[in-house]
Amino acid sequence: MIPSFAGKVVHSVRLDYSLMIWTTDNWEIDLGGETYLLRPDGMQAIDTGTPQEQLPPELAALVGAEIREVLVAKAGHLAVNFADAQLSVRASADYEAWQITGPAGERIVCMPGGELASWPGSSA
Image 1 (tube, rainbow, N blue to C red):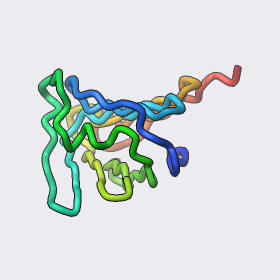
Image 2: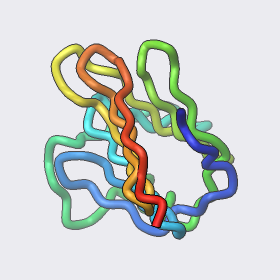
Image 3: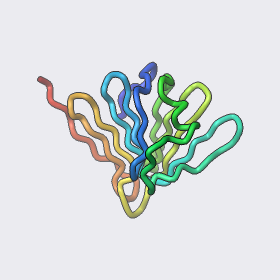
Image 4: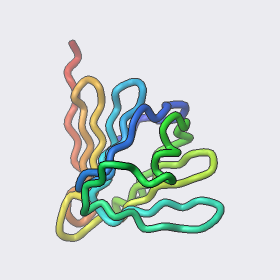
């Protein structure tokens, strides 16, 4: 259900009530649940509940980074893997924790409870 993200490059990152990541080929990954950044020097919780005009340096460093893979666990948890970092978000029982939107309008959403819903994009 999740397309391959191997080799996709992060074009921009925004923190505005969710952590939004756009790739150079117009995919968008929105992480709205409990989000964590895991790097070799430790794990850090990302405050997605407050918009920030300036990105924290550890998130700004993701711009230009190549995504290695995007994984979804059976319970709906999502991991976005980079060469030296991982963003992860757990599914929530109460709200949609994350969603991925493609350039043709395709959409995958982690529904409350971790079930995934998907909609195809246009074929035009």
